[in-house]
Length: 123
Image 1 (cartoon, rainbow, N blue to C red):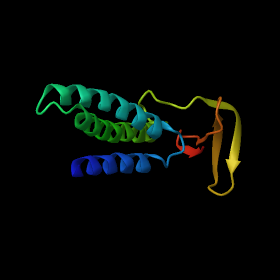
Image 2 (cartoon, rainbow, N blue to C red):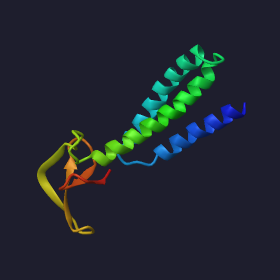
Image 3 (cartoon, rainbow, N blue to C red):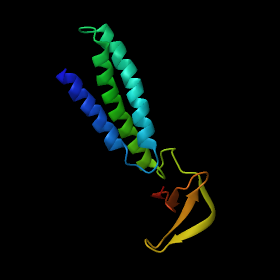
Image 4 (cartoon, rainbow, N blue to C red):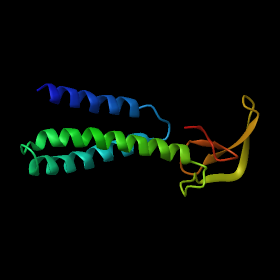
């Protein structure tokens, strides 16, 4: 039972850390990773060791959620980089940010804004 509590706490902590982003990539990837990891963990847990699919699902969900959150964080960092994951900016109108003394654009279809170099400005 103590392993169950530890694993549940780890999974909840992963979700809590993933909940503070502006793009939603971390949340989406953490949820997908937890779901995939949970299914894979249940299958592996059922077929090896003592055959406990529930414990395997918890371990897989915790690991998958953490890995998905990490991937989402990396996707957020890659916005504007040469990674193939770029914002679709509306470059027809350029705006000036007096606070940072930099120009920025709006992303098409969202309310996110990006500086000229592709760096995320806001959500």
